[in-house]
Length: 193
Image (cartoon, rainbow, N blue to C red):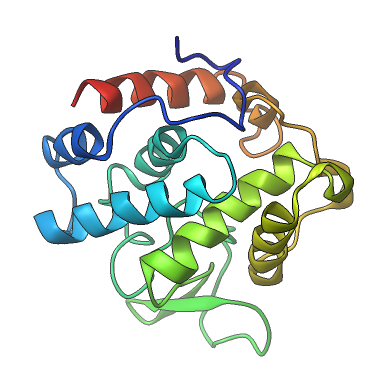
């Protein structure tokens, strides 16, 4: 049973085909069917290598991006989970940090050139950093965490706070008291296609 108390490290609770069908059933921005398959396949491939349930990560991506309709998730930004998106803006591009131009205004946030080897690993590695401290992680998990935290750091006090999805409440999402429950509900829908 999928719930907010599901472990962050778990076997897949569904199939890629069901996830693709569920994502396609709702508006999905500028992504066509082959692109959705590519994104879903990337989640299944990355998660298999580090022991994470790709359906749960896809559920978080669906929630964070409005099922791939958000401006940050669209090409060329491909941000799967609001990574580095702060809401800060500037009329002139700041000298440091990650920014994207929208309607003549620079917005702070991270963009990724590709889903498969940049966006999805950054998302999965960031979640692993919330789930594990380095001494708890396998070499493959540590490598993915390092890749993700090179894109956007994480305060040391957040490392290992979320061995279950409920641990993201108040950490990934603030105050986020029902954040993990929402992710679990979406994951259930994804498994049903």
